[in-house]
Structures are given as C-alpha cells and as structure tokens.
Image 1 (tube, rainbow, N blue to C red):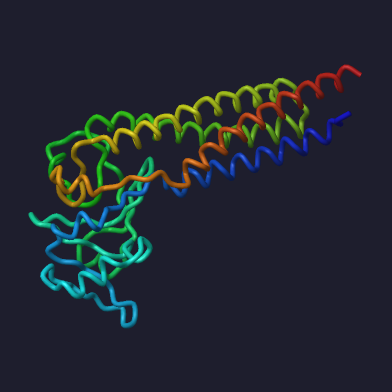
Image 2 (cartoon, rainbow, N blue to C red; image 1 turned 60 degrees about the vertical axis):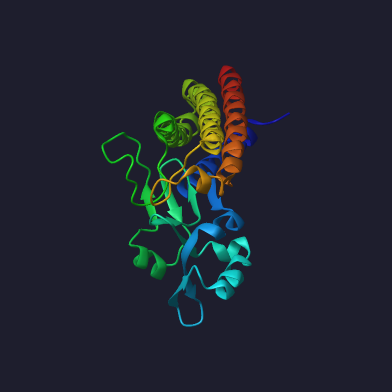
Length: 268
C-alpha cells in the first residue's frame, strides 16, 4: 500500500518536472522553423551575404557569380542557417524560428549588423498602418493575430497557475497538511492541463494556416512565386508542450490521491 510520505514525494517530484517542462517550453519559444528551398530561390537571387568563418569577414557574392553560387547552393541546411539571400525588389530572405512571443534568426552578428536587424524581435500582434511594410522578420498574418494573442494569454496563465500550485501545494498542502488546499491544487492542475491542450491546438492551427497562406513575409512582402519556396516545419516546443500536458495530468492525479490519503490519515 502506498504510504502518505511516498505520495508526497511523488507529488513534489511531478510538480518539479512539470514546472521544468513549462519553463523550457515557454522560455525557448521554439514552435516553428521557417526555411527556404534554395533550388527555387536560385533563379531569383541577386546577391548573397555569407560570413567567412576563417577571418570572420563578410563576403557578398553577386548573383551572376555562378561558381560561388553553385558552391553555396550545395551547402547543407545547417550551413545555410547563417546565409542571407538578396532577392529582386529589395527582399531579403533568411532562416528563422518562431514561437508565441518572438521570432529569431540564425544569422551571425556581423551579418545582422550589415542587414541592420536584431537577432530576435517581438511578434507584432496588432493591426496598424505599417502592416504591409515589414522591416524585420515574419509577422503573423491579420487572420492569425487573434490566435497569437490567445496563445500568449494561455501561456501566461499556465505559468501563473504552475507557480501558484507550487507555492500553495508545498507550503500549505504538504507542510501544513491542509486537505482542502491539496485538493484545490489537484483541480488547478487539471485546469492547467486543459489550457495546455488549448495552447497546443492553437499553435498547431497557426502552423497549418501559415503553410496554407498564399502569401508570406520576410523583410518585405513576398510574391506568390517566391512564397512557394518557403517551408515551415514544427519544432521541439511542440514536443515539450505535449509532455507538459501529460505531466500536468499525472501531477493532478497525484495531488488528488494525496488529498485522499491526507483525509484518511486525519480521520484516524
């Protein structure tokens, strides 16, 4: 028979692991990766900026330099992360990763200084007069702005609930043995599980919607022809999100079991 002390220890361990998963999922904020099919970009490329890893200097390659272009376009995806492609109409393309709150690129500091962009930028989640003049990285389309806002609200609420559960559960539920507090923590973790499911569903919807869009954004709005070269992949925050849902549910069961044990212990 499982003792009261055993369930207390398991509850604390499950709480710690759940909090760790929540911190990793929202701190890394790495839900999707935007890359480009270089084979489709080649005919549109006018210049390429690449950093020489030997002397850390920038090399700007003209689109007519077939020899260097062939060498660069033969790079694997890892090497292409640190390259910016100049396209006609002053459009610049580079690989990025995006989350709930921000979007970041993989470019080196020298290339970012040359392009006059930052490593990360906060996603714009409101319509204004500059919506069609994007100077930075991808912004959510107008139809996805509300989903991004809801996802951000869910993420903030989940973090607050996890912090509250840890504080109240350990100090009141376990140290002071308050049965009502322990039961409340179990219910709150169930609520957190529900919000985590909603968050994961929203991010999956955003990912699917972005893949289906007939237009996309980089430093400027892309044409439909160039947009077909854009590939959006899911990233590891989806795995962390799924793990968070599972651990939230397990933690909820443990806390509810703990309150039952505490209730029986108090009756003896």
